[in-house]
Length: 134
Image (cartoon, rainbow, N blue to C red; front, side):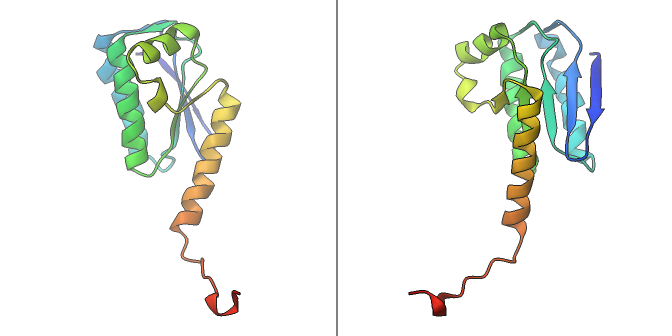
């Protein structure tokens, strides 16, 4: 599968250049995405602007990929899906599980917010002075 890769400071944008992603390409897509879990920059945005159609099994594979990223404390978002792709997620009752945005810029914002959230949650700098609370 041919993909375009754009690496930013906090995330990588992976853009498949195939117009259709079929079941036989699922493992290839998963491998292309999973390699970023081993990279220094783990957050991934899957930009589907060039993709016109996907199979239902690909939709499930994308949900599984998303979950594997969040399990590893990394962000995974999908952006720029067309109506056909969105319909596949809806038909398979997966749309509610998918973290997606209409634009790449909005996906950037979410990744950066999730990074800040993880940094805050990982920090032990929180201390509450309960003696001075009334």
